[in-house]
Length: 201
Image 1 (cartoon, rainbow, N blue to C red):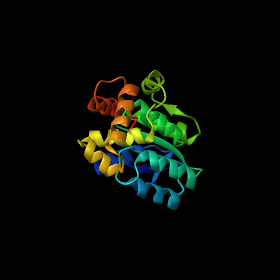
Image 2: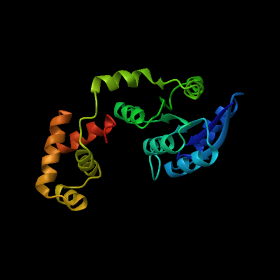
Image 3: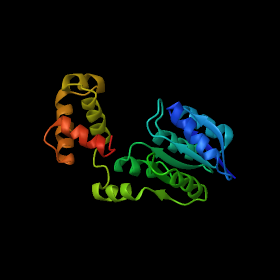
Image 4: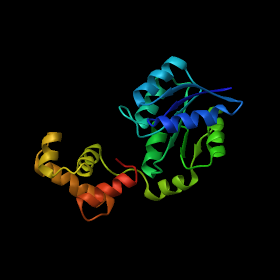
């Protein structure tokens, strides 16, 4: 029997996934969580075999939760199941210690099989994402460049970004220039969008 922790911030999605997975004779949902922090707490409390985590959640996101679960409950294997099929997210999930990464629009039987395979210690990765991840390569952005681009996505101008990150405006512009070059784009907004689409932020 695979003891499963299910974490997703959307209650309807979480409930539907739990109901579907509970239909399987070899899977039992021992805990549910709506945030990354709750997922970590429930993993420590219930010691599940597999944690099925969404990425976009309040507090700690699924990738941060995955890393903490792997650290605090090393016997628990992590499977990421998300709407966001972005190559950069795949690389970050694997770096966080996840064994699997599937997207929510996959057929139900594929998700069930992914839970079983991850529970058995095998890696499971969406093949399309794996190919895209190889094509884009490793995230080239530095942590500070990612911070600056996230500010751009939020609609903040250079002066606001500088104040929020405690940097000079010139330093912010340098980070933006570097990020534009690394993403092969022509503007800060385009660089932010490309980086976001590739899961680099």
